[in-house]
Length: 170
Image 1 (cartoon, rainbow, N blue to C red):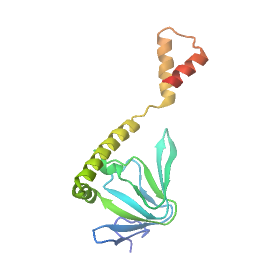
Image 2: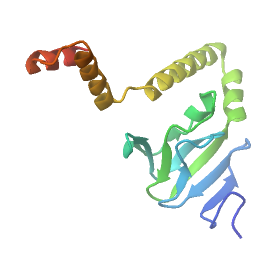
Image 3: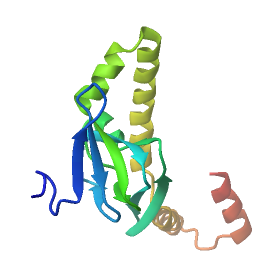
């Protein structure tokens, strides 16, 4: 009988270490989580390969192929809306350790003060960088808007070389 949260028995969980961590086995081609879903857990890859990808301008873009030992899914734990910014898929049978938000916050709070302060700064920077990355402009639409502005201001001729140089500078 499949475990709760498992459609076909492809996910197997067991306790590991002295803590309350669960190890999950994810079979090849199974999705760990999908972009846009809510995230309450991060994962530590201890065996196998995981592909991290996202939808960029309507197309799948592979951001990384992770190998042990790697952590993934942590960004959703730090973003206010808890939304996954990518999709994680097992490229081969993989084993991951599940870390929930409380576990992670507990480790940050119980770490030595210098480490805790450093982690908090890194988390803050991660949040800021992620917000900026998610607002990245669509380049083709940006070019269309610039050309529109030229036309609206009566500029109907553009010198190619200087325009390319100016855009490269920008």
